[in-house]
Length: 295
Figure 1 (spheres, helix red, strand yellow):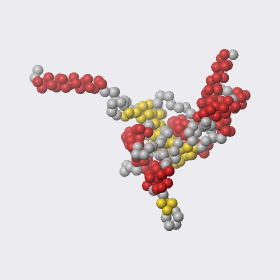
Figure 2 (cartoon, rainbow, N blue to C red):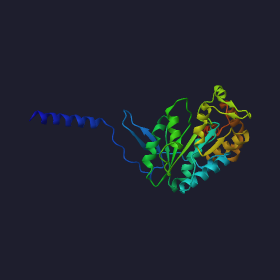
Figure 3 (cartoon, helix red, strand yellow):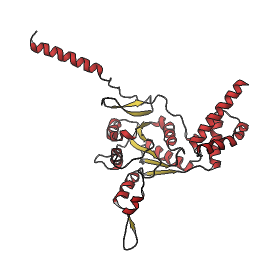
Figure 4 (cartoon, rainbow, N blue to C red):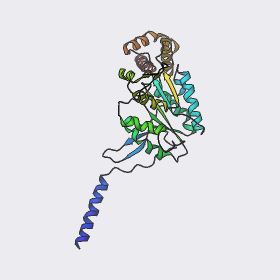
């Protein structure tokens, strides 16, 4: 065997070992069998891929109480989208635990049979948005890119990436992709007292925001539809508790008897949110079921 042949043989062996160490290339997801996906990054710089969500949330529009105006607007926007009519990117902001993320999941369950698909993207991966759009641009399905609990600090790369993906790229946004995002902050970035010093006064008394304030506002303004969520009143909270207890099989008498305990639960959590109501209902219904089993 010549030296060249020995070298080529050793090179082939080395390549075979390296290939064995690499993660397998994932197959293109089946968009007809899975309705929800997560954008995942392989360890070791092996690229990114869409991971099917095997057990997606089953929450429905009717499960979300006392957010009727917000529900009506996002349902209408999503209906336009799946019907291939003009529709907007959506920003849902406001009090925690009031149903922002659940409303987006309810959109998936309400329109999956009409071709809607959901892709969840972590804030750390927002720089990959152009790759995600390119990946699904030729598909017949309609895709909502779901960014949950967004908030940015000054100078974060994801802020610029999302801004460009919404409305700032030389390439047009694909007509089968929308972005639905949730945040506890209206403008997605921390607001500081120092921002107020950036305002200037005109001779007519008008206020003009400085560059720092304009930068904070510019991202949220790129969302065409804003939905605001507010803390629930006590009666609203009790209504949500009753809805979830009913869904767990509790009788009207049991639901009425749970009022005091549900208010104490909310007081202990410092919040009367829909999330707190759901957590209480699970705890209460579970204890009732356990007591019935012992009887």
